[in-house]
Image (cartoon, rainbow, N blue to C red; front, side, top):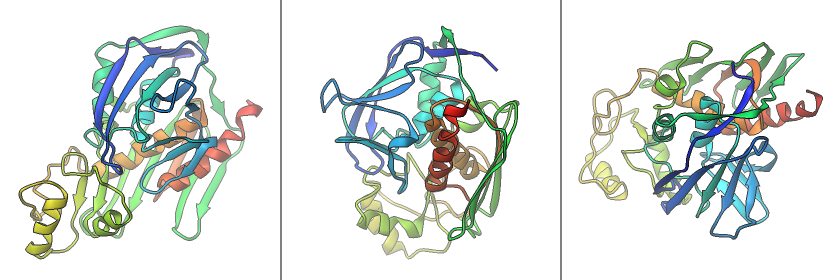
Length: 305
């Protein structure tokens, strides 16, 4: 585990659409000096429109994590934040010309592939870690979700998901010192259940969703006329439910890809604490809301370290 801070070696520019807004977004990652941290600059709002990537600014967590500071808003940032955390990047400036981070292929892989081609720059400053002396237990009685943080000398996470789904079943994913983030976690895509699509569309969400950036899980047979109607929404010629329970014979990258994506989400949300953590994490039925609630609790321990 490195004790020095790191930044990226050069600039990286990404263009894509926002998952929920559907708007084309241009985003550039730039190297930043030691102790700068991770910051977003909304270039469409002016040179001073900068917001720190900290859980202090989380306002909503509906289908993604959103930061807000005055008129500055950044949403759906979890895949990008997980990339920076997973690669051990402490300092970077992210310039973006719209509210929503581009979804790209629904995973962190495009970011990882670009940055790993050039490597990182070690900086002449020590990295601070957040450590814990006591166990933290947070449970959401309404949803049954639970996250436990236990003191440790390194970071590890065990994530379990249970959607009462015949297609997914109960899935488990683990991240520890033997895990290759770039190969085992970063490629895992976001997912949605077919029955959630209509409500999401009606709530003005997933305007940028398509079969290239999300896994769509279909629990039960669907009338072909309904599939044909949604094909127009997804801007594709046809849709069909494969016997495995996914739209259009989608090929999973891992048997437990959905659990691994939930782990990716957790890493991204926990990075909003503002420094890497040393702890053993156990998460059951986690999501952005409980992730960020626990991150807020952990953030309260920063001044004690």
